[in-house]
Length: 279
Image (tube, rainbow, N blue to C red; front, side, top):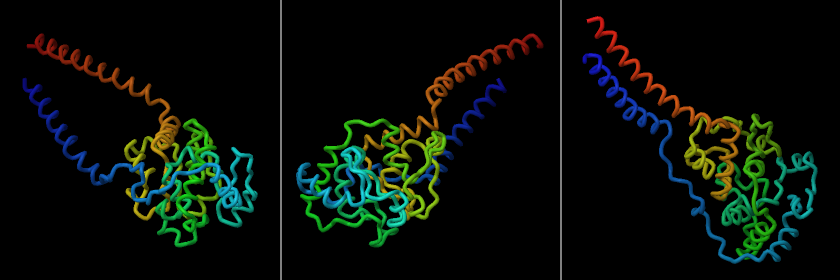
């Protein structure tokens, strides 16, 4: 009976520490932030219905001087070396922009990329991509409509990650290394994402990718502007690389708990028998 009371006390004290102290410590290390906003409600809406045909003309007149659109057979006008020398970065291909980015965010990137990505503290009128705020909402909506019309209807998780993240981030566990010079241009230490799924929880990753400033005010990482579905695909890919044994591990966890409970009962009954025979 004495041992049983001791066990109860240990369980109660452990419970108080875990459910009392641990959540408090977690709240101090990871303060609560507003949930992810996939409508990017801080950005002004582009009030126009886009016309993809007109958008193509505007894109070919204004965008392909820097960007490639390989889906349309448009190659970059520069080699990577020349682009790095001219801009400090390699402008991204636009083939999948209409798929991975949220529609209104994409329009605001065209209008003023530093504002849309929350990088005005980093770029004061010197962002490598110029602002097109001289365009009308109709023209911007037409560009977005065109980019959406040529975008793939679906992409694999890895393909979304490659187009959304690899300009800055390595993922060495899958032999992927950042390309495009943006890591150097931002002048910041950019983490490898191979094990990020194990060091940060899913909620943190969603809110951080959606708006890094919520967690790290002043960080050089831009707000990426992914749609909710594209963001889920990015995290799913990171999980597939950094936690490929998740389902196996979780199924083994339940079996281990059951094993420990059974062995605990056996040990308790064995202890009672030994002490009964002793006395």
